[in-house]
Image (cartoon, rainbow, N blue to C red; front, side, top):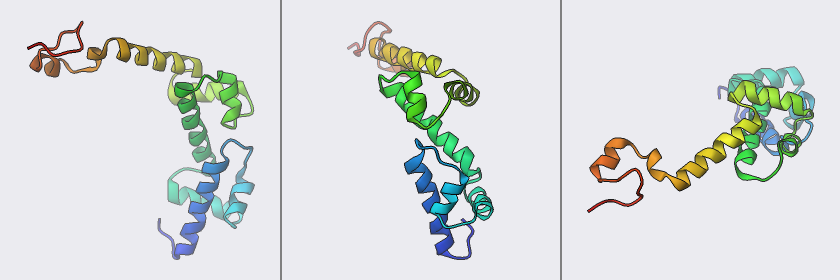
Length: 146
């Protein structure tokens, strides 16, 4: 961060922390900039200079990362996750998720659970062949052969 004073740097980090804490709430540029005591446009320039993305881009990334975590680790429906991470429209959540992740939230969840099930049932699928050969591991076994 290239600031003239540590005080400005702390205020930008404070704004980032505000986003990290309130990502699930309806927040906008005004509320974020107010949390750091900056005007909206001055804050926007400083945030982008510091983090190489706008506050909105950072907020969207934060929400999508949390959504991916919930899709992997919670029983919540896609609709519940959409609202839990701060999106106001399931359609926009689905299209944005697909644009950024390459799969819809439902496809992402299925792919993750398919990989997890495969890893549990066939762990050697994830071991490189050279390593399995060196330790004489068989594809239908999870233990080394003597």
